[in-house]
Image 1 (cartoon, helix red, strand yellow):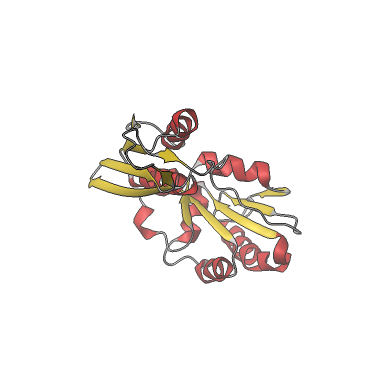
Image 2 (tube, helix red, strand yellow):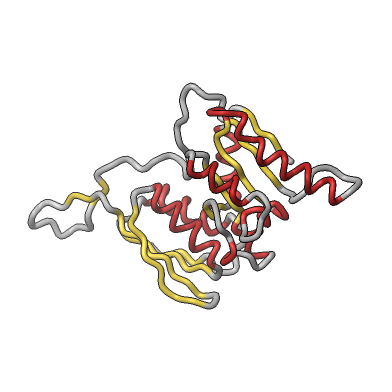
Length: 210
């Protein structure tokens, strides 16, 4: 299967890949994309579906190739290898039993309106205090101006790294990083896309948005 997702805005490259995998469950597929955020998102999605991926290309022209890792091919069989394990239902899901599963979406680098300096101090304090939620804190998602909190020099970078080391999932919008030309500056978290963000909202017990 070949999918041309060049020129498609997030989350279309992942959606096109998901639709192709769901419809045909191909043993081998290639996806063409035109930005590094899409490369990361498509590769991560394919990984959740049992594919081993490789990437080729640079400077706006990339090809992600996936080969399904769990196949069975009887001796003498000339047909394409067959999938032997069921395909997971969605990308980016996990199970966290016994907790409330709070998802926090941070779309800004300051809290509230009125005084920007005060707003930045409040947000720094908020992020550093999130750990008080304990095991209920499930995932942090950074979008728009919030992605700037995940790069080198961020006043909360140390806290975010500590959260990630504790097993709290941190996702950073790839489209937003690309918009601000910060994709190579991200220091913590996984590059993500809108499909995974929406899916995570559906799975969460509570969503807090700033």
